[in-house]
Amino acid sequence: MNNRRVRVRFAPSPTGPLHIGGVRTALYNYLFAKQHGGDLIFRLEDTDSNRFVEGAEEYILESFKWLGIKFDEGVSFGGEYGPYRQSERRDIYKKYVKILLDSGKAYIAFDTPEELDKKRAEIENFQYDASTRLMMRNSLSMPAEEVQALIESGHKYVVRFKIEPGEKVLVNDIIRGAVTIDSSILDDKVLYKSADELPTYHLANIVDDHLMEVSHVIRGEEWLPSAPLHVLLYRAFGWEDTMPQFAHLSLLLKPEGNGKLSKRDGDRLGFPVFPLEWKDPATGAISSGYREADYLPEAVINFLALLGWNPGDDTEMMDIEELIRKFDLTHCSKAGARFDYKKMIWFNHEYIIKKDDSAIAELFAPIVKANGVEVDIEKLTKIVSLMKGRVNFVHELWDASNFYFIAPQAYDEKTVKKRWKEDSATKMGELAELLASLEDFSIENQEARVKEWIESKGYSLGEIMNAFRLTLVGEGKGPQMFDISGILGKEETIARMKRAIEVLG
Image 1: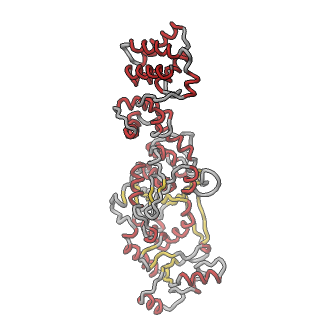
Image 2 (image 1 turned 120 degrees about the vertical axis):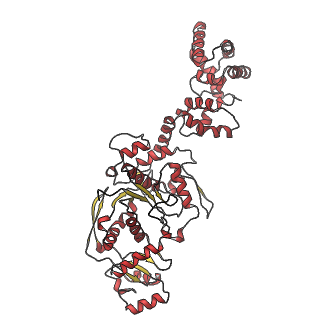
Image 3 (image 1 turned 90 degrees about the vertical axis):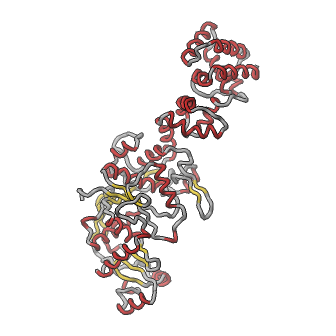
């Protein structure tokens, strides 16, 4: 087992948008594969045709493209182990259903839903297993001729796995350790349905994982109850030597209270639970996504990586390469991870600061243009360098820095009352004359000459700077004053000062 090539898979169902918990599962598979020089497979579990949702497959693929999680093979990526859609593997599954039937490890059952409901009403806690199977209509309780006749006449049937009671089933889980289950508590699960000629999740996954040489199955905690059944299926096929190692990840929990994170929690508290915006094709309802909510994909990845895993130290900010180096399944928590959406906002803020100014400027440029302003990217990059530390999202840069692009049309009343004194107009007139006389309008020269002037006049530095800010910005916000006037330039700076003097008096 230790010498096998690491091959892991992410296998969603195209039944709607990808939940953020699924994104975390895919991320952990990706980190594990990359760390071990292995392969990440993208497989689609689309055997339940009744739950198929148009556009879901494309949505899932676009989500991973935005997040930067790259697959090595699978649906839309190609590979030597295809096809990778389970609906395209019908004939493969039929072969393995026959193997189980021929070896007596499975049997055919004709019980209708009504008959099953009746039996549940008769027997408390009814379970289709060794203690009840002979009461039912199946190939174990019926003559072979009758079974064959029903099949030939087109009667719908299922194939059930024949679980022998009293066996100790050991599941070795990388995260949870050794878990032993008595097979007596397991029911004879349905593995195949003749109605659509498709297998259920249990058989399809076992067969696919074996044929695609999957070495590790890293999946959500909700699949842990299935693990003993899957171990028994591997035994039934004689595949014990190639059984993958299991790792069942803890649940993502609500930000507050108890229970699993749901879309309702996001709607209630105002954060997305999907990577991209999703429009329900049936209802037209739109659900928010992290991309459209202006989160950086690197921030989402970093945040998710730490939900249920820790690097063994206090490090929080880690790019994808560092995450790959440090990732260790044995450092994953057994307990659920609370989804702290406020921490997600913090990560986004930190990644905006960390990201190159020019890259943030490229993201900000369409927002500036949408507000009717044309500005060259070099100037925009300078503005971003001064302002990005003040925002949590790129779109917030407009409200934080729009004074760079649009001269104030009005002046904040509270700031005027506090900062504009009786002699402010006179002093600002003097300052405007000084700035107009400067041939060198660099930030450094402005600052030196203005401070000399203030000192020579005996003025208060704070009083002058506060009034100066009001003339250029229209309120009491923004970075250091000469960073503002330096970007505005001499002509625009003096024009704004003169207008403020005229309006405020």
